[in-house]
Image 1: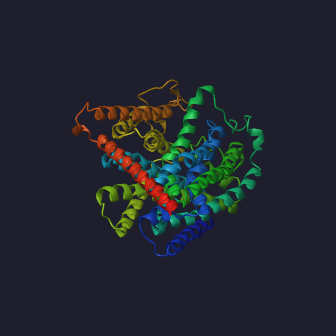
Image 2: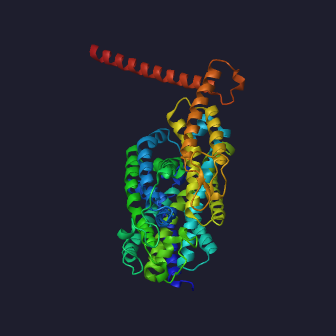
Image 3: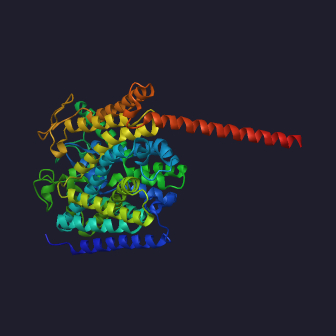
Amino acid sequence: MALNVLGLAVMAVFYLLILGTGIWSEERKCNVDGIGMTLLASCNINLLLGIFTLTASWVGGGFILGLAEATYNPTLGAVWALMPVAYVLTFFLGGFFFAKPMREKKYVTMMDHFQQKYGNVLSVLLIIPALVADVLWVARTLVSLGGTMSVILDLSYVYSIIISSVVAIIYTLLGGLYSVASKDVIQLILVFVSLWVCVPFLLTNPHSLDISLTAYNQTFQAPWVGTVKLDEAGKWIDDFMLLALGGLAYQAFYQRILSASSYTQAQVTCYASSAFCLVLGIPSVLVGAVAASTDWNATSYGLPTPYERDQAGSILPIALLYLMPAYISVIGIGAVAAAVMSSMDSALLSASLLSSNIYKNILRKQASDCEMQWAIRISVVVVGMAGTALSFLDSSVLVFWLVGADMSYTIMFPQLVCILFCKVSNGYGASVGYMIAVFIRILSGEPLIGLPPAIRFPGCRLDAKGVLTQYFPFRTTIMVMSLVSILLFSWLGSIVFNKDLLSEKWDVFRIKRKQISAARATDDKRNDSANEEASTARELLDTTSL
């Protein structure tokens, strides 16, 4: 197959359009600079722009290709394509519970609260899984685009990833969150239009059966709807909770929430984005359904099938290339590229954890705005290069997606819940909960990366491919264990030092001093309020007497 010159030209135009938008957004900032502008757009993102950028952050290349892969895979099916429904829960919980406490404290990143309450040492340890999750986010988006371009354009997988990575890094550096949000508008419109343009051609191609007939009937492969057997229910619940709650522990989510001009706007942004995720997930499910209903021997692709060739992860670009006209498949690659770019720049800008929480708050507390701008740029480049390097290790989108969300769910989510909603939480409980989550998660194994389980939960057995797999909801179990450990050991730590069972010199997290300071601050606030009320009452009496 020769290089697809037309497709390559379309991609070049698309990349130039994105870079041009970045330059325009940079000029439109009117020379307003500073970390607040770069990371949160000065908390002045309007409602429409906020909806677009939050939706685009989640509807990335991993979302589009992952849904198609899960639907097509004969061992899974559409019932395992959980992302759209899971993200509805993510956004509703985020808007209803998590947005308000984050905005009230006027944080820049989700880790600010950890640094204020737990100190720098423990916060750095907690930042590590959050950063790794962002790096894996970058890797999965590049894998999705690299696989698509290599299939449709016949361009080298390595070149596809490197070119896309360089473009995404450059335009993320150009203008911070405002620039990223402006480009997300264009990218999300391209995703929506391009995917829905491809759907009619796929559904009417001559090599595929009617998907309504193959939904529940065995044809060329197992029904594309799929099933959840009773002994797989635990794994299904675990995967759903992983995707739904794991998304609440990503910096990219809070960056969008904190950039809104008000709490009400942040809530509306979340609710509207959940609806967009559902609509944008439908085309990918249809692509997977059509691919599962296709007689591949009747196409130029031939046999074995994509699944038998271990190319299920690239089923969307394969379907675009072999089941529709060439000029339409080029439109499809535009959709994937737009989705990848909109999601990747969100992960790159989440490198603010490095620049803000480590460089600014620990290494250089007196850093100027100009110095911080360079720190942010360096952080973006570091995260981008790390994600690019990882993308060469595996070609499956689902691998990077699930492993990244796994770390957010089992390690970061219980920490975030406790620090936002449980006043009793302190550094002792957070440390124990962190260690329990990390060690038990490692010992539980992960077949996606070839890590065998040392701990076998109930139902652990060989799957259809002969890989030892946990079918018990073990990730949710680990998350709950971590959550309970944080609360229990925080309570025990408070008792030990508040009742002087141990000398205060052993209180490395200084929880007693912080509690005394907090109590004094509360008393001062009450006294000020009482004095103000008394002063108002005296003024009223004086006015009445006159």
